[in-house]
Length: 363
Image (tube, rainbow, N blue to C red; front, side):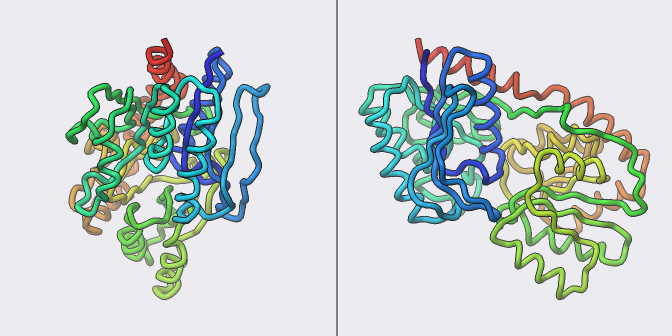
């Protein structure tokens, strides 16, 4: 039986597209293929939960190894320690392939793969390469270091000059049966935002959008945690806004219920890859209003299943939100379109594509 190492700097309980990818891919492959997977990550404190113990799952074929000391996800000292500790751990470990999830994990993963003479894959979930302030280190790791293969969830990554030629675009999946679409019976319209409350998610835009609907009978559901949560809460308090509700990080079951209670999905991000939350919202029958960044333009088509915003101006988002709020039939048509489109996504398809790459490198 072949053993795969998935090296990921930040893993659950931190919730993001990359973390969900690792969980779903690992569980599917271990259950359905003749391989064992060990997820090597950090000890973590997130949203009141501490994850510090290693775990053996699925009959021991799936292992989660946590290194270092308990810290927040963005603790620089913890990340530096992880680079050293994971490298030392890997060079004394037997394995057949490393799949590193960007981008801090690429440093120890690359050195360990060289020393052990094993193939290495870099999986890219999203980048800052389009931003003027993108770090040189990120650019070098993503495009300037040779890997045996690269996987990217978003095709926009292909436009950047890269020393790697073996780059495969594999989109994330969903478990569509977990999401439901039903009639919206509540008295107020509800707009849902799902994402980390961090600068790159456009929280500065989000708070101004919320203030525009202070007196208009529209509720906002804000799902997520992050460093800007208190800033956003203080803004809402000072503006005397009482229609914005902070729900924190929700379980998959509770998130599906919140999608089902909503009318519009809003994304204000400055940078994205191929956002899983948009696919989840589609599977819940919601029209989309989103920034036109990353591969969102490949998921959302203007006036077909949602609206795209190119200029990050508050008025551009609210114009499209108003159109949807005022036109129930448009919301319903877009919702049905999204339900149909969402059926093209599944973790089964995603995992099968990843496994194809594993097989080529393991021969």
